[in-house]
Image (cartoon, rainbow, N blue to C red):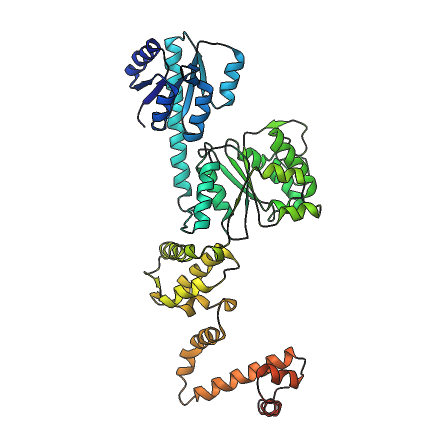
Length: 462
């Protein structure tokens, strides 16, 4: 990382002193005398010394703007006004430290070197986290208008440390959206901790979330910190918040309002620096009307809502996603090169995808493993998921699975055998569905009742 520092101060003598003090330490010092000129170049610097009072505005306002557009930057405030209220305000707005004029040169060096060490540590943590997470499916692939709109909204909301509610059907990728918000925020060097309220028993969810003291309940043989503690300095993602117990909702609301909580079995109040992102596949307004979700908690979550559209509304994303999943499967499962035929692509585009992106991913993975051909066809995709295929596709898939065995039998009279078996099975199923009513069965089958009676006798269908 380059040792560069931006000084925004209208006092040229101060800028000169800073330059002479830091250049021997290997820093390249760039100076600007106004907020406007400083903000123009601030995106290129991770370390900034910012004066509080400048000719064209207040340094605190500049600090807020820097933190929005360059959230990774470390900003050290410098001022001749040594008032406690100003120092507190600067630290609240995200300043790293606060120096009073005239400052001690040695103190300046110590603060700047410490800040640069902080930047290096953040970079190392980020690289370690990326190395750990590189095999996980965090990449978002989309070209549809609906998802491009989501990307723009993520860009707007991520730098602002507000609560976000992500809504959408199951399998649309709500956790990926939450990770994108986290990874584009100032908290990206911190942990991203996810917890699914629907997958944990309600009587255990509170402990999992807030933690517990030793002996707080049966089985608590030692203290547990909980997910909130694990997410310190980062983001806590609560999936399926509609499944939260109504009593737990009250405790969660207090935490979100006060950033305070207590472990189960303890009266000690703990502080937490955590951003909360919630997700749901339910209509929370209806849940409020039915008394299953607190209205005040809903508004606490719904500062900003990101609605992820279902895959059926994102037709432009289907083939890029399918191609991505196929490439991943080929790599992960060490398969030979594979591709989709035009008929397979047509099938992918025509299917409604009730399970959304998750269903598409599972179908492509399964097909890539089971298909023996380089070119994946329509019938390969339909195999094992008969709700997704036509009657013709279904029969074709089933016949293909037994064709090798049948073709080895000489003089097997294959045509008559298959037709007879299909007729017998079809008539048996329809009769069962109609409760043995031959009149209804004949109408469903589209054949004469007398013909049906003959076939029942022929195939000895009871």
